[in-house]
Image 1 (tube, each protein chain N blue to C red):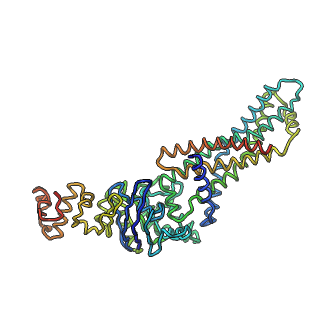
Image 2 (tube, each protein chain N blue to C red):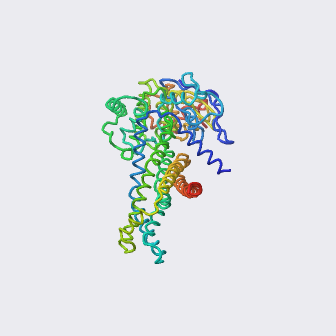
Image 3 (tube, chains in turn red, purple):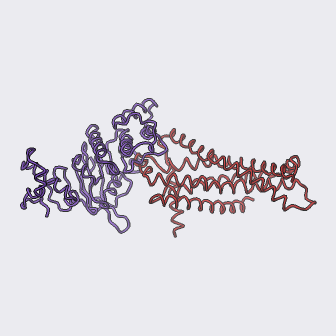
Length: 245
Length: 286
């Protein structure tokens, strides 16, 4: 029963955003601010994760492909497809759910507890629109960009590790990248990125916005938001893979 | 003027406000007093529309908040300023941006016009040269003053203050009280203050509403309190022996039984002013 009431409450919170903004300039500034906070703020961790993710993927693929019949280019193809299809969108978004999700839930929870949200309400501002919508839009703008960047860096990490470890020479790796390339995989990854971006921003916003209590509840809301986001990402990942691929 | 008519509010099975009716007068500081849990904050949140009432009416100069649509409420709220107990300043913004925020949101003024208005109100609350500071860098009293500046920057018709003196020393509390009182008179605002600070009650309580367990038990001014015969009110206001003595002194002064030449120390040595009030006085406490 609680599950359905939470879904209902979530939908009501989301519906509350659909009103006319009080001042479009202020909202635009807030959108830019949130885009920088979410996108630029997570840039470092995305770069590091992506390079190592690609590198490990290359090393482990090489470790498992021991047959001399298989050409070396296959390693590049496997690295490319695993990075594009799964690692860049799903793994990066799960990490972002932790980084961005806890930040959003903590920020909104703190604003709720310290009555800053009430202060905005009393001013006559639609707090759902002002506080949640820029975060969701900011995430929808920047997270797919981060995922694309992650794809590039992941593949580059694989190439670097293959080259440095003497697994696959760079020119062979590049040749492998171009073989059997399916552009559909990139579109699929982007579809996942947009879906996950919504989950990463909307779910923590909901939990943070509706915090009741004090500091302890803010911590709990952050944890719940991150766990729920991760589960929803994995669930959405399966559903999208099932229907699109 | 705000008229509260037969307001009831419950949370689950617990009824917090029981048929509360009162009139909050324009140009006066209207105080809502009562012990913790008496329903002061709930009443104030009902008045500003943060809580919906179960029944009853709340009229802002004749317009019923209860029957308003969301758009009408938004318009009304732009005429409301509120000072919160913890100031509720936006942590990530400087003092200047905090005060400017309502102007950014609801006016099309130029940057220089906004800055001039911000500086005006900051000067009014005696906060010059704090524009670039963040809330974390200023004291509690200063935060309250920034909160007041933000609340009055749009020239509101109604000012709500929730425990404006909580966490402040007595001297700073008096400064805040005086400031709110002056602003109320200068701008002819309807000010509603939630408090259990006795200094505030005695200093600026022009119209006082006493709540006890969600019911309005008493209404009057700070002068009426001195002569009040209401047991629960007296227990609340004059909780300590010191305050009971102070009340008796004030009564004697009002009745002309003591004057400035009388040695107050001697009165206290003799057992306090209550002895002078006499047993026949209806306000004397046992």
